[in-house]
Image (tube, rainbow, N blue to C red; front, side, top):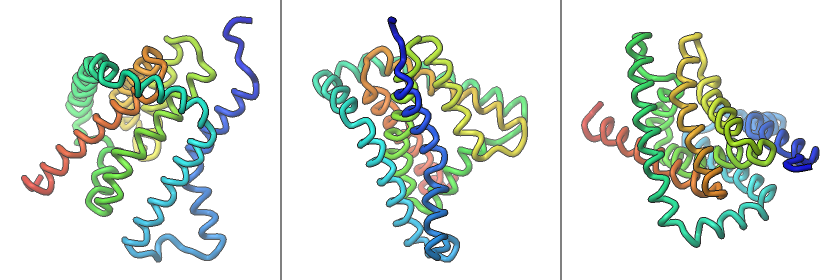
Length: 234
C-alpha cells in the first residue's frame, strides 16, 4: 500500500522523541547514582559536563540515522548554495511573522519576552562558551533531526507534517519554562519557524537545509543579543 509506514519505524521515531525529552534527566540521574551532584560542580565543570551531554546526544542521533543522513548530506552538498539562496526567502518570511507575533503577544499581555528566551539569555550570561555551542550547533542539529527528520519518517502528508512539526517545536520551547497560561501563546512564534523548517525539509528532501537555516537564525539572534548586552550594555 502506498505510503504505508513500517511499525518498527514508528517505534523508532517515538523512541527518538522520547530520548530527546528525557536524555538530560537520564544523564543527570546516572551521575547522581554514582554520587556526582550537579549543584556541587564549579561553572567550569558544569560547562564541560554540558558539552559531554550534548555531544553524546548528537553521536547517538547520528548513529541512529547514519545512513539517511549520509544520503541527505550528499543531496545538500552537491547544491548547497542554490538550496540556501532558494530557502532564504522563507526564513525572512518566518522572521517577519515571528517578530509580529512576538510584538502582538508582548503588547496584549504586557510581558517582556518569552521565558524560554530569558532562560537562553541567562545561559549566555552564565555559560557563554557553552551557550554559543548549544544555541548555534547543538540546537540546529538535534532539533532538526528530532522535529523534522524523525517526524518525516512517520508523517508523509506535507500539511500534517508542517502543522505537527511546528506545534511540537513551539511546545518544546515553551513547556520547559512554562509558568502561566500566557506563556503558551509563545508556542505560536516558535511554531512558525518549526513549520517553516519543516516546509524547507519537505521541499528539498534533505534535513541539512533546515539545519543550515536554523544555524543562521540562531547565530544571528545570538550575535544581536551579545552586541546589545555586552557591547551596548542592554
